[in-house]
Length: 391
Ligand SMILES: NC(=O)c1ccc[n+]([C@@H]2O[C@H](COP(=O)([O-])OP(=O)(O)OC[C@H]3O[C@@H](n4cnc5c(N)ncnc54)[C@H](O)[C@@H]3O)[C@@H](O)[C@H]2O)c1
Ligand SMILES: [Zn+2]
Ligand SMILES: [Zn+2]
Image (cartoon, rainbow, N blue to C red; front, side):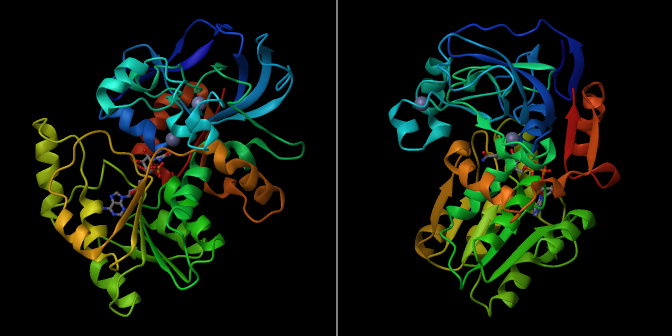
């Protein structure tokens, strides 16, 4: 089959590889009909997250048709079912899965010993996302093997297009969780840094959850335009001071809730010297991530506010003003998304027409064009916000 394969930094190719096989009774094989490129894939593209190996198949946002099921799938899935595959592989049975903490499933990471050493305790297996999270082949491919398939799926009802439901596997529940974990109240100003695909879903979620005011921050006009269309007031950080404008919009009090939809690759610019400092330390391998936005959020957040972090961090961050955070009494919430915790509710909202996540798609291409589309997405060429690939 064809698949997008990681060969090294900024080197992803569309290769011919072996078709996946059932390896365990709880597996299913899915013929992928649509898959997407995620901001998290860019961190792998840039080799900022450790433990990718040449030959690894990329992709963790995919859906398709079940073409084969193992004997242990137990009637929960059958050939011909149309499913979205959540990026978090879940056993459905461990203590964490029972609590709905799916992204820290205790059993789905087949490199558990490595993760135990690095993180202190294992987290869930993830598709197409490094050997720290199981080294599972991803879904930017014609076929994908879904481990624990009886639990790791979202069934798609008839009548909904791939484009309407594909993002249930990642960015939609990610934006939703980012907003939900802020405990939004009707009096809240919610400030969202980053208007990429995750930021866009977070903006819509904060609006749906009833925030008084949603403010979105980025520098790319097309992404700011999309944010405005979703109901946000926008700040272009190239043109104005984020801190001053946020204080202005909140009568000097600061936003009640701050959400980081950027993660470890914050934009580097001479006008923000700490970003240059982070970049240099990153190049000298003295720091793995660029946490400019964390510093900005801690500084501007209203005391007793919440900082929510869906943006991915890979390792060590430097110069976090913990004294400000502690004295202001801030609450931090973060994590990889517990996808299946939210998807019944979100699927219902799509069916009811409360939201159609396909608004974010700007580019649709063939799987073979994937390597080029990674660059288009990374460089935001041609107004690119979200790429969907059709194997
Ligand atoms: N927690 C999860 O489960 C989960 C799931 C999906 C994605 N993610 C993470 O979410 C993050 C965003 O993903 P995406 O697909 O939207 O990526 P993206 O790269 O398309 O979007 C990032 C946006 O942030 C903007 N930006 C950069 N620096 C900024 C700054 N200082 N202030 C304001 N805006 C700034 C960029 O211009 C860009 O529009 C990534 O870190 C990704 O890994 C996490
Ligand atoms: Zn993702
Ligand atoms: Zn589990």
